[in-house]
Amino acid sequence: MNRIDRLTAILIHLQTKRVVKAQELAKRFQTSLRTIYRDIRSLEEAGVPIGAEAGIGYFLEDYHLPPVMLTREEASALLFGAKVIEKFSDESIRTEFESALYKIKSVLKRKDQEHLEDLEPRVQVEKRPTTPPFSDMLLSEIQRAIGQRQVILLDYRSAYNDQNTRREVEPVGLYHYGAGWHLIAFCRLRQDYRDFRVDRIRKLDYTGHTYSSQNLLSLPAYLEQIQQTQNLVEVIVRFDKKVVRHIQESKYQYGYVSEETQGEFVRMKFMTLYAQGLGRWLLMFGKWVQVETPDSLREAIKELVLELQEYYLNRDLADF
Image (tube, rainbow, N blue to C red; front, side, top):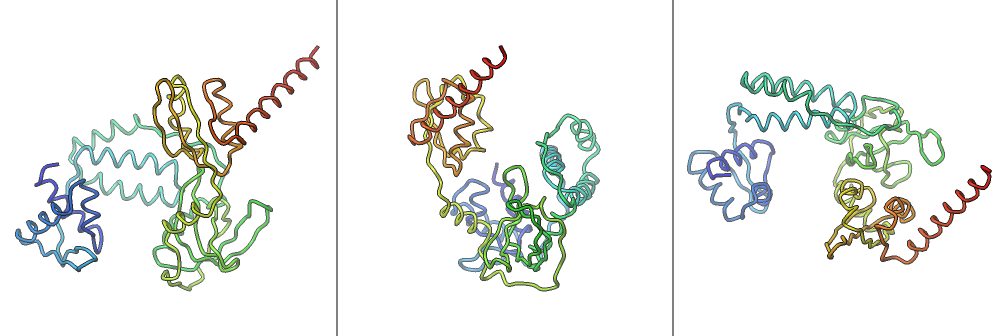
């Protein structure tokens, strides 16, 4: 990106938030803090009223750019986003995003509009089948509660005992993992943080009360705390290069951390809570995979193999 484009992009970025840190700009534009300071000074010299608070960041003082036209590549990226949102959100988010996308399309040049019309049917996202949610209109309501710091009342169907409970909660954030959305919140009933699967929320009501976020963990802090307190098992696995290309996506479901190439093999590190599940996945690669550590997982895989062997031998005998 040349300097003129970066200056324009910095100005647009400053309009997206109340305060923007120099480190945030440096990270986005992959440049040094010194360069960001120089760019900010150039914008100020050009007459842009940029305010600054020491140790906090930069902000614009009653200044707005006129509507910015999107490039064809930016418009195409939004189309990709729409495809993902269509499959990985609920009706409430899809409706609002579709409305926003129509507004964006309305300001595009005719050629760019035609480009999106041609591209739209050529981009598809497949979603793995999941259990139908109790409600398809919750994500937008949860986002509103998070943004307004609203205490909400949930009718929740617990997974472990299949019972309904009513919980007053202080929402911390939304987190997507395991093919579904999860509401992380402080539960007033349990007096602790809880992970609520959104598709198990039968009903959501506003209590009319707000809460202070000062005493709550942020979502990143909560996730970091969970990772530190969980008893994760380190697993080192060596894959033959012949099968590595078949696991590039699925490895992330089993706690993949890192890898290194060693001749004809790729040595991978996993951190997992469910070593047994990881072992069952590794079985599908047969002789092309070898567990280096821990010994307990190697023994577990041996037992699984013997169990399968015994099952099929007995079944073959029964067929005669």
